[in-house]
Amino acid sequence: MNLNNITGNGEFDVKYIEHSHSEKTTETERSAKESKDNRGKVKKFLLYGKSFLPFFLSHHPECESFKGHTLNLGKIKLCIGCFIGYPTAAIALLLIRVFDLSGFFYSPFFFVLSIIFLGTFFLSLLQLTRNKKIKIIQKFLIGLGAALLFNWIMKRPNSYEVNSRTAFITLYILLVFLNVYHAYGILGSCHKCSTPFNWGMCPGFCTIRKRIAENKLDNFLLKFNDFSNKILDRRAKNKKRS
Image (cartoon, rainbow, N blue to C red; front, side, top):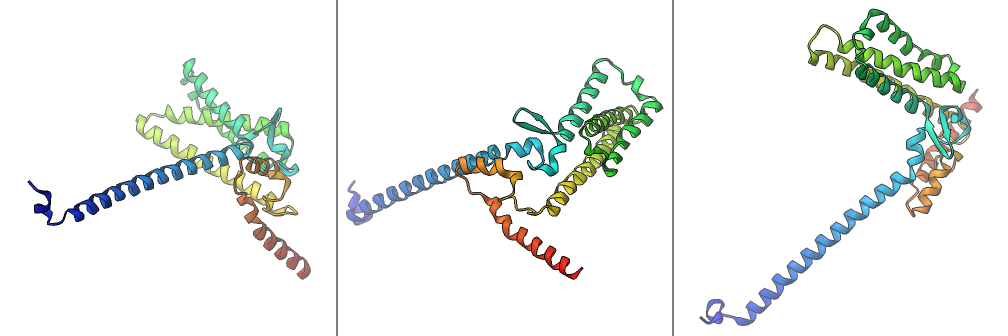
């Protein structure tokens, strides 16, 4: 069968095939470009994560205002609250389970003790945790108190589902409250600073800025400069009024 009889134009067939091939090539190139862009975005995201690793571990800027909030292990700074409180709670729950002490720690005495341990949070409100030793003891007691409270709730004479739900809601509210207070404290200290929220310039983010530069990333922290200047202007105006 003659192909020209079907199409009526052999030249059109050649152009059609070339056009189809061109479309497939373009689509392949587009897919390759999108794949390369996606890999670039993932790599960039991981590099930013690597750059901010010191902050992920310390949860505080590296400045004098937060010197008493971290534990120093060589060049590594660890958040006292997270690296004392959470491990204490996890280890306490593990020991209670391993040694089958749930019944022993279910007594009303340990419920009251858990509330007392959690109540040491008020040492922060009284500014007593400015002493690092007191702060470490407080975080240890809060972690232990959370473990005892969790065990007490799980041993209540209700179904496992009800106890689990109650324990989750109780501890979730506790964690949200502690984290909000923690964030408020950091932001409050930054606001009072002579360079408020100017994380692109202040010494508290010096290591992070250095890592960003080493990884050839955009230092988006510099964008906080205008916000910082507005706070300083407002502060100056309020000072003049007073």
